[in-house]
Length: 166
Image (cartoon, rainbow, N blue to C red; front, side, top):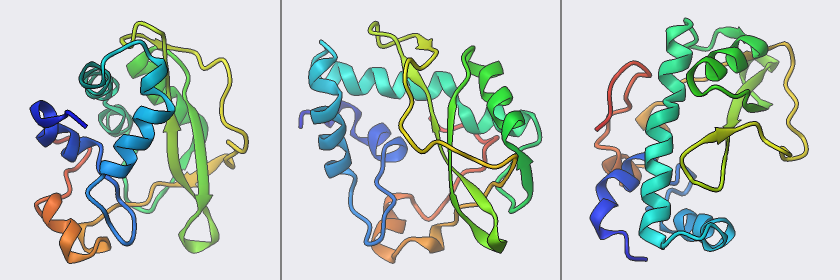
């Protein structure tokens, strides 16, 4: 993959947080093979567009502005969707998984993009199984949740939703 020009940004924003952790390259390859090759964009342009969209969406800041923070508290699923919609102009899909305290936790937020790779659109179809209860836990993420090798990739610092990442 020819991503040398944006490698620092792509490592920071498009990492692969799994156990055991990897450097993210496999998830980039998978994203390119699944979506990028059909986008009409060159590989570097595809990932630059993805990083720009991520910055434009700024989902964590949108949630934080509405008092929704990763702190183990319960939050309204509708308020989460509303907060994201205020930021990007379209309603997101929200996926939940089993979380702590026998509750469901916020797992993923889905946004769809027009073929121009710059405009958020209402998703024509969302993945099956996007179902959340009325309230979900927003689970925090800490660097100790990774093994020591991958924590170095993140510089052992997890940014709060209100911090700016450049």
